[in-house]
Amino acid sequence: MFNKNKRATKVLAKFNKSKFNYNEFVRDFYLENNKAYISVKVNDYHEIISKFSIKDYEWLSDEFANYIQENAYYIPITYDIILEICGKFKKEEKVIITRTIKTYFGVKLGDAQIDLNINRKKTLTLLLFGFISLIIFLFLTIYIVDFKFIEPISILLWFLLWEVLDNFFLERSKLKEKKLEAAQLADMTVIFNEK
Image 1 (cartoon, helix red, strand yellow):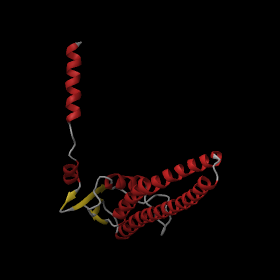
Image 2 (cartoon, one colour; image 1 turned 60 degrees about the horizontal axis):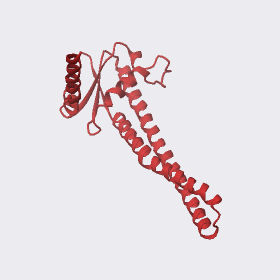
Image 3 (cartoon, helix red, strand yellow; image 1 turned 135 degrees about the horizontal axis):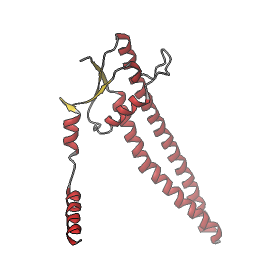
Image 4 (tube, one colour; image 1 turned 180 degrees about the vertical axis):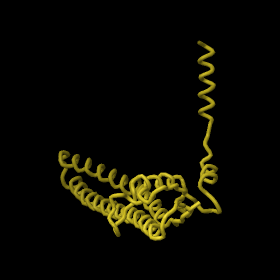
């Protein structure tokens, strides 16, 4: 029993010390000539373009879009992405695929910009309510000594302060990161490899 616990402790210690070299992984798996490549093997046009799409209103299939987004997640924002599609397509299909990919990720970028604007408006609204509540709180503390009015407003002030900080610092930084990732994908170059 003692040897079993000792062995388990050594194994756990070994696992705790193990590390993953993220930079080396990205360099080996994605980078070539300072460009990040995402390669996709495709057998059919409808693996990229949704089979539910209407002509001239094409949209990416969910599986294809998810694959690109999952791979792009590991690529630092500082690198341009080249999407290499491995498969044989007609010239018209290549044009449609390229346009649809650009449109899809352009819309994602637009969504991220809208989310940032909503966050900014929400933060400003909360700041305005917080400022008004602060003025009321100061008025009540100076001219009215009755604590039953002051306590709810002080709770409201703390709540508004917490929400402003959460929106402005935490949520906004996540939204900015999302926008940068969307911009990176919207700017990616699409190439075709028929080998």
